[in-house]
Length: 146
Image 1 (cartoon, helix red, strand yellow):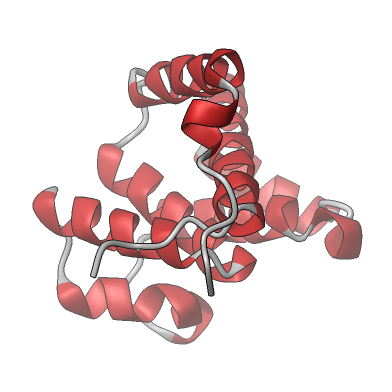
Image 2 (image 1 turned 45 degrees about the vertical axis):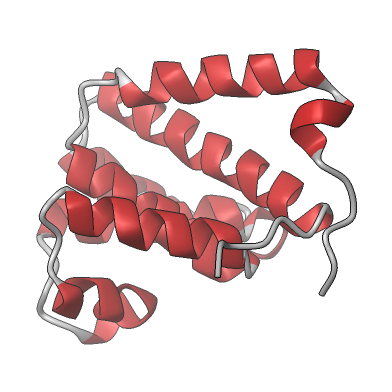
């Protein structure tokens, strides 16, 4: 695949807004390891090679284990994740695949059982943000560094 356009230089103002949103997400009082799992799972679903590469590297730097990283794509079938992480991953899948899932009550209730209302909104903003980044990176074919 060939990169299409450099979205950073094509629209600096739009990217300033995205970077401001990402900065806000990084300051949310959710566990950094949980946010990296969410970013990785959404990026896997969206087929974003650039983001999968970046978030696995970031998660490793944050102390995440290889075993858990390999297990994210099959998290439902592994014992590696806490109930809170499982709820976040389910909510991530529901919102990332929104046109298919319509955010079912069971995923919402699971997330609401593990996260306070504020945390659930914060988590949803984090999921929304990575999905926006995925759309930019996939749409414009941003490639991971070799």
